[in-house]
Amino acid sequence: MTAFKDFNFKLLVVEKLMYWDETLLPAFSMAEHLRARGIEDLHDYVEENGLEFTVLAEGRAFFEELEIPAHLLATVEELTLDGGHQVYMECAPVWDGEDDIFDVHSLDDLDLLPNLKLVTGGRALEHMVPGSLDVLAARGIAARH
Image 1 (tube, helix red, strand yellow):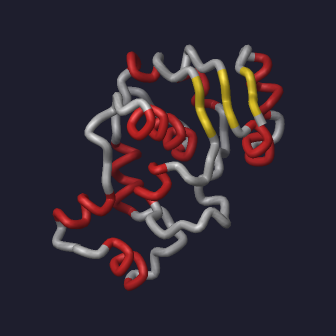
Image 2 (image 1 turned 120 degrees about the vertical axis):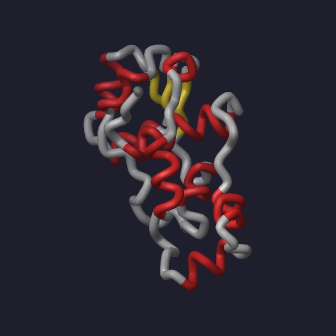
Image 3 (image 1 turned 180 degrees about the vertical axis):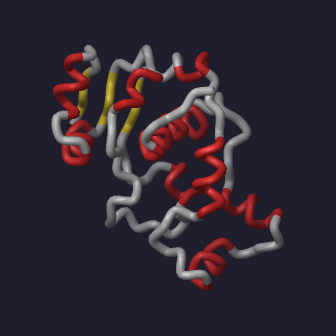
């Protein structure tokens, strides 16, 4: 079992594999998940329960429990930090990108990505994890700002 230490780092990997590469399937849809529970309007559900600026428990549970096989992790050559990721919208459907709920806090999970060559969003990562550009450089991973 592959265990990620940083949930938000894992979400970057999920974004790449599930929503960009479409190799980690089926893709999770919060709207479909809630419809299966009889909740028809995702945005009403979020607003009525005061969940506007939080990761919904359903999304957190799904992605925390999601197993990512090592052979798929080995295909990740690039990660991109971007507030518009689909995985973020599935976790926090009305998130406005104005807070730090999806900030990466640790680079300990880099060991899970043996073929990572590039991180796009290096300045943002350096803001989240001071010294991260040095860590990437020491591993031979390029950072694009």
